Amino acid sequence: MNTQAGSRSNHPARRRLTHLVACALLLLAAHFVRTLSAPGPEAAEGAPQDTAALVARGEYLANEVAMCVQCHSPRDQRGQLVETEKFRGGAVPVRSPYGGEDWAFSAPSLRGLVGLTDEQALALLMTGTATGRPAPKGPMPPFRLSRADADAIVAYLRTR
Image 1 (cartoon, one colour):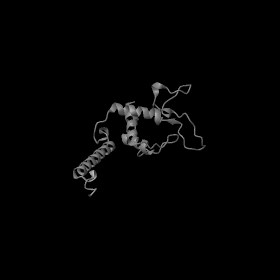
Image 2 (tube, rainbow, N blue to C red):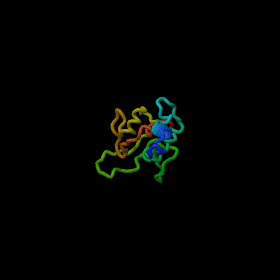
Image 3 (tube, rainbow, N blue to C red):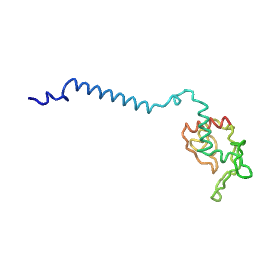
Image 4 (cartoon, one colour):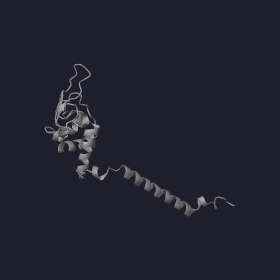
């Protein structure tokens, strides 16, 4: 007696079912991978983005991550940020640890990003230099932010 003829794994209907299940699993896996790697609707070209969420993210980044507020805001006699004057420019609170380094003594106002186009502001935040302008003096770091983070900061500072 041929033992393989009676084997369940060689039964034609069982093989077809196994192939169908395997194909279904592959299609499901491909769909899952495509769904995870696809950009969200907010990333689509020309899709409107939730402006309030973008500005809120920019506020968080400018105040808590990039710390723009620390140099670009005036301070009171105790060294505390003047809340009502945030991003209006101010004296840089730190001095260069190196003698003779080209160091800024004051930081400009960032409110509304007056005097900068969006492209210049984005370039500054993404490459460290605003297009068509000299590189900022220290202690301004040469940021290398993502486009999404730079867009958020620019949107926030334009509302200030």
